[in-house]
Image (tube, rainbow, N blue to C red; front, side, top):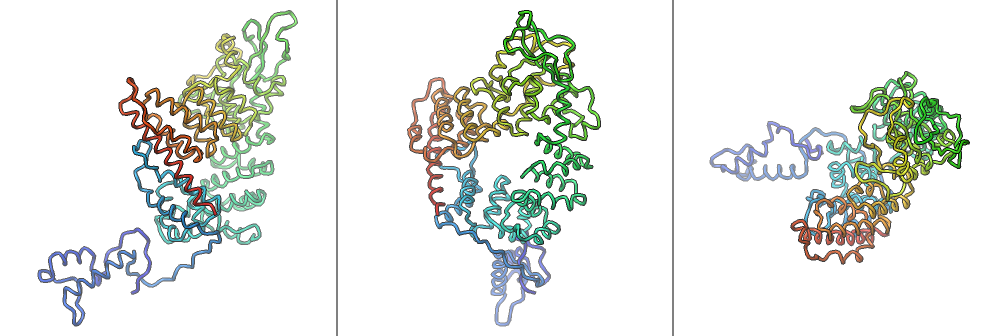
Length: 605
């Protein structure tokens, strides 16, 4: 028998008859060799006490080395090379400290002025990746342990750890997640290795195949599609879904034939994802089919004296063209409104194109079907259908029969799916007019339109069919909608929103802004926190935003914020102890920003 490596962290198996367990050795030592015969045989010239100590020493070394007796087996292949440059010494020491503190308390409600190192590890990994450093070999186990404990670290940690992390993961069951998730692409074959690509695709682990397909789609989308199509019919449904999702990378009209075939897949989830991808391409056949259905549901009707005429054409067309003067031939003032006619059935063709027939709890069937059609229809078509109006003009139109929220929510989801910046700007409107709470808001001119013509927006008639029977509140997601805007414009919109409404509904919006925050956004956040402190607000209500500020503010702002670390007089009507907490929180903010600046300097080549 020789000693061979065992799985790190696993418990030792039962002892063999010739090997006493650690518990037996401890028991014999506690009782004494005179009262109990040691469970080991003494060698010639050695007493029983010495034999017991020898056995304990061997067992201790074995336990510390995570080794156990096992039959001899083939040694593992050497770890692959990682050609990336090593970390600077200071940065290596910093990483060791961050990994050692990964089990610290942390948390949004913590008190004290010390920076939360646990929350700085993701930023450190992102900064190291920008420089292209490789992870120190000695810290790979701690890095893998950190990624195992925190799923949000896995992608960045595995990319930084490189191919040697995958090599280690094959030797430790606790690190098997690295072989299942999408991580480092450092060990993937290149474009000049077609045979290696094909072999890895056919024989590799699932995570390796997903990483390979994603990498191939980035550098050659057509080659990635060919690779996937070759084995598509033999893949499991859950694997097909993951592989299909990888086609988002480099998605183009060249993918349409494959995605059209996937609409007939036996898996409903695969069909739904294929339909979503096709609807993100306005020129596809599916987008045209959805456009025809959407056009039959929404029409433009001329109104007089704030009344929607009955019998509005549900085909989506109108015989009346808009009069720029707002006055008809008889001199009567007239306006225009959108009239909605929800689908009356969800046929097989609609279901094949990704429309889910059964609505969620609380949603009416017809409203549910309508929202899916509108979400998948190309936004660029609405201008042609609605008299050449631009997105802002269309959004400002009144909507009859209470369908405005349903219609605008669907357009918001379409703007996100199609990444349409013009429609996003129209749907967001001015930050000052965005209402607080639940993501609902009133958009610029539409706010006045809905109040100026209440009979248009709320009257229930037979012309537009049935109004939604679900909740009246909007389901639109401001944070997702903001991701469509360019980074600087997104940050400016959020900064103006915070200046107008404060921080109560801004947490998720801040989460989609680029890091570090722009100077106007950072100033808006700090000013709002300072106002909340001066008002004696309950401090723990802002702990989440304060945590974001520690991670996202520009580190260069630390000196400017130092003035906020002093403790002012506590307001008479303020929360007890609030002033002390605010002082500690601002001290922690400044200390964290300075630490981030130091970390940045340590990573510099």
